[in-house]
Length: 310
Ligand SMILES: Nc1nc2c(ncn2[C@@H]2O[C@H](COP(=O)(O)OP(=O)(O)OP(=O)(O)O)[C@@H](O)[C@H]2O)c(=O)[nH]1
Ligand SMILES: [Mg+2]
Image 1 (cartoon, rainbow, N blue to C red):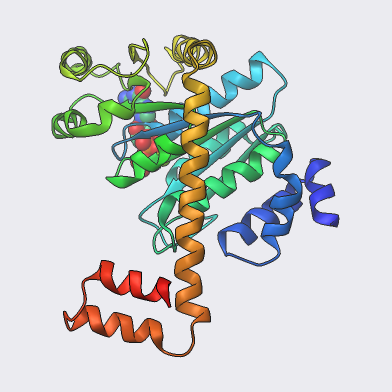
Image 2 (cartoon, rainbow, N blue to C red; image 1 turned 90 degrees about the vertical axis):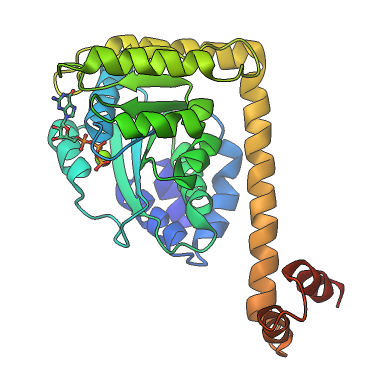
């Protein structure tokens, strides 16, 4: 188990290799996760989502740098790109971050593609987050473009979810009403140097008032920032810490962790079963069931039930 030890020693190359194995479903990845999993659960996971170009990467860059100035705790950034088939590549955001955080050995940056992933975004992302947690990173930023299911998955993976909006994105505010408000623990109006920022802030506050009450007593704050200059980052990170405190005190943190564990367990069950039927059932029963559904002789539920019963 050389690699696990190397990861624990802080060997960044070993960590990078392990993350690649996890991403590629390499059989060498899981034994390491099994060995290090008892060490996980100590990181604060921050989901950062929002429309394309709202300034998420710039904001994460500033927030990560702020964390590093506050304490010596290790910070990781995982940028999940739901539209890209490429991994580890130089997407714009990474280049922005690299510039400011380069040279700080206490910050680990990784991007991952998620398109075409078996089991979708959540499964592989969650494993990478566990790996970073095991490796000793105490703040983990998970950035993803808000694109439908993606931001809901992020919310399931994170302790605290930031939704980053920017002025002049009226259509997205409509989308916010449709669901994103429910997952936002903190709403950020970035680019508040732009002229119509106040209107965006106002619209968000109005939407929040219309949103149904959430469990517990947390009222999501709306925080204006200028990620490009760092203005508002301190206030934002204070709100993050208040949310973290509230998670601890209200018991909501515990129930989120429980929901996350249940979600992962269910997901793995689904994944394992599906894999078994697809790969290991080689006598053609899976194909036969598929044909039965295609030809409308069986409903998908009937066909699945029959496969399992056999
Ligand atoms: N005026 C202004 N521009 C900003 C601010 N923050 C970021 N930008 C600019 O907005 C553009 C997009 O920033 P990114 O940080 O890449 O945005 P993103 O949300 O990560 O983008 P995607 O990952 O592609 O969805 C860049 O040109 C930034 O320089 C800000 O506070 N004010
Ligand atoms: Mg980005």
